[in-house]
Length: 567
Image (cartoon, rainbow, N blue to C red):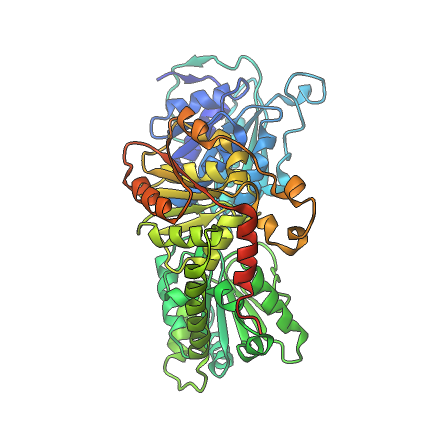
C-alpha cells in the first residue's frame, strides 16, 4: 500500500503502532497530510475522523479513558493545536495518556507572516508532561532516523510511565506534502521501560498499622479508573470496625451503597454531630473530590487542637494538600498498601466502632432524603432521583460537569460498570465529545447525562459519524446553568439569569433529527418513566431524551433539601 515519502512520519506511526497504540483521531488539514497518509497505510490502526480539533481531542480522551491504552491525535498547523488544549489539560490532571501529533511549518518560516504559522513547539507545554520537536530533513540519514525513533519511543514511555498523561510531538514538514510511494516496511526499534513495583519494608507497614490500630480512620476515594485489585483491597480494609469509607461515585469502587451517601449525610449533620464523627486519621486515594461539603467539613477540622492526620496514598505528580491537613505522602500503589495494612490489623482486637457510628447517621439521612423527594414537586431533584434508579446495570455512565455530576454525587447509591466525568479541570467543554469517544471504546451501552449549557457548548460532537447505536444522551433542559441557581456566589444575584444561568434556547428536537439521533421528550414523572423505558429499548441508533425541568423552582427545592435537618 502506498504511503507518504516523509520518512519521519512513517517512523512515528510505526513506533506508535508497535508500542500498543490502536486508535488515532484525525482532523483534516493540509500540513498534516504526510502524517495522515502514514496512518492510513497502517492497517492495524483504527482511524477516527473528527473535523473539530477541540471535539477530536475530547473524543480521544473518551476512547482512552475506557480502553486504557494511549490514543494518538493528528492535526494540522496554526491554531489547530491550540484547540487541543482544553482536552489535554483534562487529560493531564486525569492521568490520561494522549499523544498529540501536530504538523508544523519548517522552522525558517516561523514568524514570517506565512499562512498558519505560529510558535507551535511547546505551545501546549503547560498541559502536557513533555513537548518534543522533530525537524524536517531533506535527507533521512541514519542518525536522523535514529533520532526520530528515540524521540517517539521516549514520548510513548513518558505518556504511560508513573503518573500517565498527555505528550506533544510537533513535526516540522516542508512541501511537497502529498507525495507517496511504495516503501519497504521497516519494523522500528521499540524501547520499553521495566521497573519493579514499589513496596514498603514490613517494619514500616507495622509502624503504619500500629498508628491506625486504635484510631478512627476515614478512607476517602476520589475519581479513579475501575481496578479489580484495588476494589478488593478497599473492600477488605473497609470491613475493619474502626474504618469508615466515603467513596465518590467517580471512584468506580463497588462498595456498600451507604459509602456513596457523602453529601446526603453531611447535609443533615449538626455542628456537634460533625465533631462526634470526627476522624483521627484521613486516608485519601484517587483524584480530586467533587463534594464541596466534604472538603469544607474536613478543612474545618484543621482549626481544632486535635486536628486529624491526613495520609495521601498513591502516585502523584506533586504534593497535593487540598484538605490542608496533609501529614504523610505515601508514594505507593494503594491496593498493595491497603492489603498489607488489612492483613496486619485484621488479627487485632478493636475498641473503636467508628464504622457503626457513621452507619447510624447514614441510615437517618437516607430515610430523610427518600421522604423529602417523594413528597416534593417536579424538579431536578426528583428527575435525577428517578433517572439514577432507572439506569440499567452494566452501563458506562458519562456525566457532564455542573449539575449532573453533583446530583449523581448526591443521589446515586449504586455504581454502574464505570462512571466518568471530566473532573481533571472540571470544564463543561467537550463532555459530549468525550462520551462519544468513550462509547467507541466499549461494547457496553454508554449513557451521557448532561445539561442544556454543556450540550450547547459541544454541539459539534453530534456531527461525529462513528456513534454506536447503543449511545444515548439524557439532556436535562433546565433553561440554563442550574448550578448557578444554587451556589452561594450567584444564586441571589439579580443578574443571575442574564449573565450566569443563561438559557441557550435551542431546539433540541430539530438538532437531534438533523444529525440522525432519535428524539424523546419528558416533562413530568409519568412521561419520564415512559420515556426512559423507550430510550433503553432503542437499539437501531443513538438517541436523545430531553427532560424539561423547572429552573428556578429546582434551585429552591435543592436548597431546601440540603437544609432539611440542620440543627
